[in-house]
Length: 278
Image (cartoon, rainbow, N blue to C red; front, top):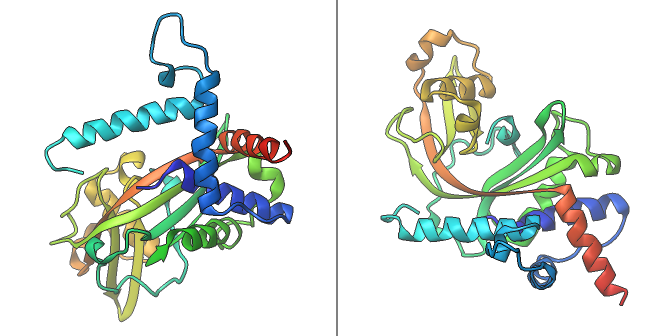
């Protein structure tokens, strides 16, 4: 699944690019994050009410506590392993929707299809999409994350390129895609669990689009509303009540997502810089 370190790496890739400096490697990010967490935990006083330290006071430690709790719940389950912020743009429009579904078993442990999403967070408007581009082709994580962190920030044609002054208002989300399956029909998927990738022909023209797994649940859509919206996103302009007349090819998939706001990235990066000057 996507991790905090993946998000930190994306932020550092973008921030370093905008500042004209060399970013940390993914291995460096992972190593420093582990040390950073230990340092924070060691310096957080034990709460007077004896609540476990990991659940108190610091966002990074709260994140770890939540992740640990989620992992425990998942491991005890019986074999069962977000919004406009996840409305995506493919890196090669028109190049992927008819590609056979990728079997997760065929992927290297270090390779995943992936998407990187940038959101702007404000007190007045909440979370709004700022850029999202990814690929359904398996990527080696360091190369793929670095590529799409910049591509989604700087080359999403729906938006102007992100600038350095915007960094403090940003959130990044990384979604690693798994479990690709051909759906039996347009309703053969679960809201909140599956992303959808559709392709179809209409009046001799091919269309295709995708929504990540969190879109339908965050928008509060039904399955039908999701499918129709996705067809509209692909460019279909037919009558809404006739969407079932269109023969859709539907691939469902799952996505393991993690997100991080700039403030948490900046605190980690300041700590890293301080360690390097000692």
